[in-house]
Image (cartoon, rainbow, N blue to C red; front, top):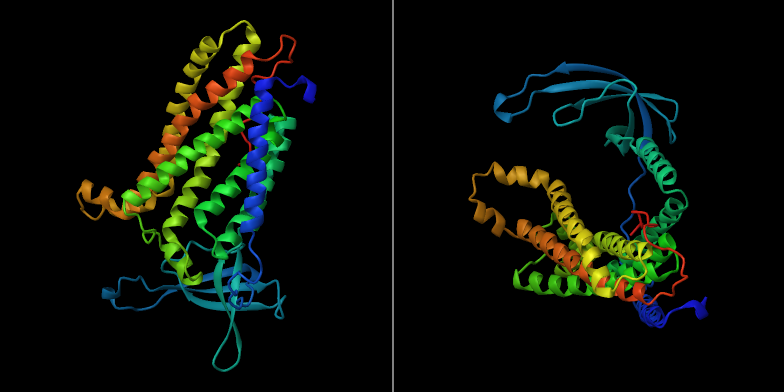
Amino acid sequence: MADRLTPVHRRLLVAVGVLLLATTAGMAVLWPTSERLPDADEPPEPLVAATVLDVERYTEDVDPELGISGERAIIAVEIEEGPDAGQVAELDMHLDGFPPISAGDAVELSPATSPEGEREYYISDFQRLPVLGILLAIFVAAVLAVGRWHGLRSLVGLGLSLLVVIQFIVPAILAGRNPPLVALVGSVAIMIITLYLSHGFNEMTTSAAIGTSLALVVTVGLGMGFISLGKITGFASEQAVFAQFAVEGLDLRGLVLAGLIIAALGVLDDVTISQASTVFALHDTDRRLSWATLFARAMKVGRDHIAAVVNTLFLVYAGASLALLVLFSTGGLPVGEIINSEVIAEEFIKIVVGSLGLIAAVPITTALAAVVAVHRPEGAAPLGGAHFHGSGA
């Protein structure tokens, strides 16, 4: 393999190698040790699976000023786990604010002990794992049917990405490590693993890896600057505040930047591999194209990609914050005051900084890929157009 590497590709591989060594060293230094992890709270008694057999609704008299309907129900459930497995329990409960429930629903019961020492149960939630399992199976089947071998490698990359997040990023933040640094090291590790796993060891992937890394640097720099200038504290997120109570000394502002880094990576690697693939596809059609011509033609595709993905970024964040937007809209506040609030300003910074990183990624990756492409030997095998949009990052 080494004797077929062009000088340009070899230099880029050296850069990837340095990046890989730095990432490996960073993970070794930041890796959370058990003594640094906070003591976990004593876990509650596990929920118990049950099936609803019957629902008998009735209404009790309540004060209208309380704002509740008074609708209640006696719900018969068959307990499927624990010491009372096989028994039928009758639960008398309010239905106000509770999702519609009917016979045949699979539910989770929360066990409790009454003051008299008797074991009681309350409906805590619905069982969703079977539905999620079906959805996951459909997703895997669709990826394999359309992506085939590339799809399989993409799924493996997705699994490794989840492993890095669960085994390194989250525990390292819990252990008190710097959240943005942890997110950056973990993101680069995910990027290198998934890009080469999904798209192979070749010039196209190397160009995308370097382009993603440079665009990630731009994103991190802009994120740090505008989170500071915007006086973002991280306290706008209710979940983040709860996390700070659970983890002493947690840097909430750093957590905002860490989330931005990880979210940006998911878009950047798709954009960079698409641009690199476009460059090599164009070069495969005519090996005589100059760097300037190749760059100009690929950028036409890149501009379309920027327009589509920037809109996608906005819709993703808007969809995730839709309930919040509805809540603000009912408050009668001026638009300027709504945008100025930290909870909206934080999302605004994420959207715009992520978009700027995306915009930077297109010309950077296109230029790099064009340099590599024009230095390929005449008999080199075609590379372009062979990527699959599902790198798992």
